[in-house]
Length: 376
Image 1 (cartoon, one colour):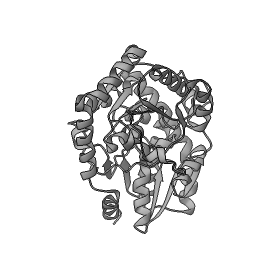
Image 2 (cartoon, one colour; image 1 turned 45 degrees about the vertical axis):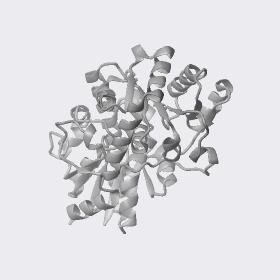
Image 3 (cartoon, rainbow, N blue to C red; image 1 turned 60 degrees about the vertical axis):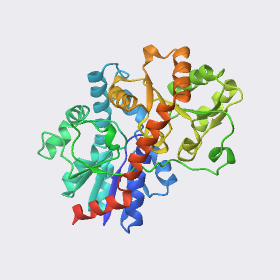
Image 4 (cartoon, rainbow, N blue to C red; image 1 turned 30 degrees about the vertical axis):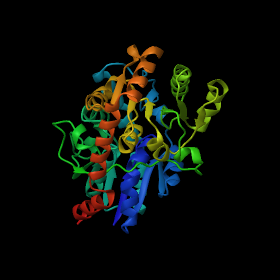
């Protein structure tokens, strides 16, 4: 069977789909992962065939509409943020459709798998008349975003005779049971297997010293906002009696090294490093958070946006994390939260319990069997 996976706009969306795509390939199916031009090196970097379907970058989609007009930067507030996300993820889908149609004309898939907000996937599957699977990238509930994506995609839906986004024939969810919203849609559960770009390992990556180890990251994107975020965190933690790791793309790392002092900074395989850490401090990225949960590592989540607050709060209410919002993120608050997470036994215990939940879920190979049944 030919299975087309449709990624989103960032490397994390590739990493989120990788375990199922790899399992499908190992089961003997032919797989292609489609994404933006800038994502192809990340797709091929995890050992999967990658096809570029649009040259548009995620940054350009965020700040310009279809006609090239300026779009305001991300607003604050749940509904404005949902509208903003739905708009630019919808534009990504519209921009990707031509390339996806060309790909399918030469390599017709029997099944299309799209990530949480890969809205081109259901449109292409509907055009081709093949099953569509929606696989969650992470914990975040995107149901509030979907109507705004449909609004952006009204012309494409009308061309298919539709007034809403097609429902998936199967949902695949990586959320551990204790963190799933009580009203979540029925789904095939799947164990989270972390993926990220690899490099030659050094002993410190899989070993550790005597001091507590704290890893700080802002994900896999290199932006000025992410550099500022990491720079502030490194400064806040400078006086902390711990080994500090800063996981960042090399472009950001080069600038941070100028001011960070004696801190390990650079790209590091988080799937290897996270299990050695006592605490992961990050921006609330979905793949980063899932990797920490699977490793049983407590988290300090420094939320920038309201849209992700409910998911972060569920993890905090379960006792595996603390959440600080922008208005509360002073250096003193960050240090206090770090101390609590490192010194109290509860967060480590609760994180280990969630990791055990994740380990008990069906593996990607078992989920491939569900895809085969669906296609048959």
